[in-house]
Length: 168
Ligand code: HEM
Ligand code: HEM
Image (tube, rainbow, N blue to C red):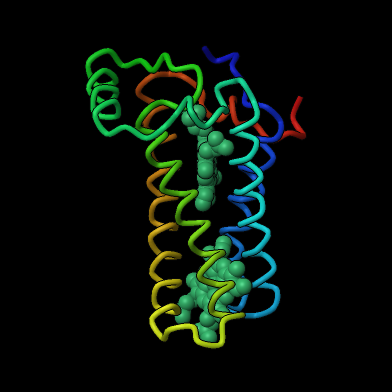
């Protein structure tokens, strides 16, 4: 199971999106030109990953990990009982988080673009953008904690499957 490694595009988009998201959340000046371009880059990278997920026939295919709450609950029960995760791609609990993260990231790019380019943008759009940024950050914290916890419980190295593309 440990020998499974995500394809290069999944790994490239994962690490660039993660890095650029953190840079935009914590480092760039909110609303600045660089903030806008970094935000657009995140949106384009996520879209490219989604298109990739429609084209490939592998665990990265989107239809292989559609969100399902009953399946996620069943999976969590199984992890608690048997301390193993034998899914080759994303497990059903991870899948729900991944769709949430993608939705948050795309909502940030779209709300940011509307704030900047739509003269009649409603006043609440800025609050919406800020709230989605905070929720996505919180979700990413849970995501990373879940990766660490699952590695401890199951003994499987999730990080090895998502190793940066510079590593052979
Ligand atoms: C140091 C921080 C991070 C680590 C160690 C990490 C680790 C991982 C791992 C191991 C997976 C694969 C999970 C599986 O096998 O099912 C994954 C998937 C994913 N992570 Fe992260 N992650 C980090 C930060 C982030 C951040 C900040 C975001 C977004 C805001 C993010 C978004 C995603 C998404 C969208 C996927 C699905 C990838 C795909 O199928 O294309 N991650 N992450
Ligand atoms: C990864 C994507 C993004 C993240 C994490 C992000 C995050 C944030 C955060 C945390 C704020 C501060 C909110 C506040 O305290 O008022 C903010 C404000 C803002 N962002 Fe973004 N953003 C992203 C994408 C974008 C994009 C694509 C645009 C525009 C094209 C944009 C334009 C703005 C503007 C105009 C503000 C308001 C600045 C002000 O208060 O005057 N953002 N963003």
